[in-house]
Image (cartoon, rainbow, N blue to C red):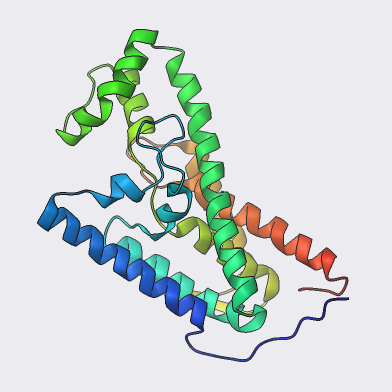
Length: 249
């Protein structure tokens, strides 16, 4: 039987520290390449839909280290440090890294599934010629600050050619794990409102589900990626809990 013991307490354990550093370097590189070389790393390293000509297999991992602005990276990295440090101290570096990567990859797979469903729906309103034009020329139009006049064509262009970026899926997986491991621990919403971790997880999950189903125009948040991170995290913890024979949480 595998035995599991906490590894000790560190304010900034090694995996969390290195993930923070990598995200910071990617963020600075994105700004530098855009301003100096006019190269958009977001398009190259962000996750594009599998059917897009811009898709590359490595984007399944690199998308997690790309962020769209200071606020985006700050809150993701703050959540990673706040909850991830506790989990890494308890699980150890290897288990935490595996969990982080799998929840991040699982998050984007769920998001791509949702995009696939949306694409199939929108394509039913368009001709094969329109679809071919979007795949061939859509990215160029977006680069020029333009899009198709037809509403469905414009939506399909965005689905094909706008990448998904950010560590949020993995961070939501970490939040889910924290809520399962330490359900009665108090966390402070907006640094002011105390709430037990288990209720915070439920509330955030419900908000993401509502946002994903509502699908408001102009909402550029990948709600189903967040839910995907939580879903994969749940199954991973349940699997570890069963495999280890003793109670994991």
